[in-house]
Length: 155
Image (cartoon, rainbow, N blue to C red; front, top):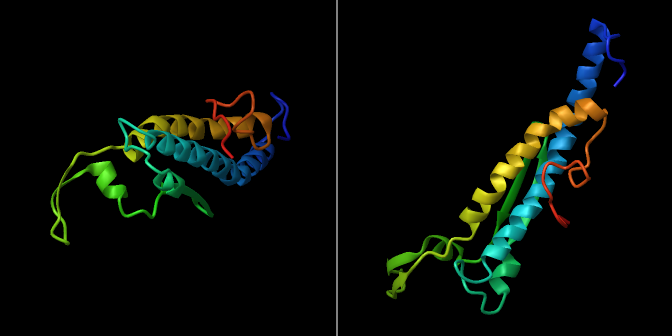
């Protein structure tokens, strides 16, 4: 930032705001990327036995993946799986399927509870980004000593 406290002019304030605005998308993307990894780890942990689904072979857990995409207007983090059993494990299934098999499978939620746990932490971290960028004048390290939450190894 270019101004010292008490010496701001309209031009310098405008320049500082433009600089902060230019840094925000990258800072938000970094936080989104970190928390997408945190969410993935939590889903995998929840899918590792009761109250989530039992992990017989580990194939289902290995299929839980993440993707973070940066757009001009923001970032999106996705955690999911391509395994067909995911919906039945998460929500359960009672009834007859298209092959005529009858099921009474209870739900073993693992995505929903993980999101419920991680979302408030993500929202709090994102809320701190503008102030952190404005205060230090550069992109904050979301895993550094002043991080709003401990992210562990989010790589």
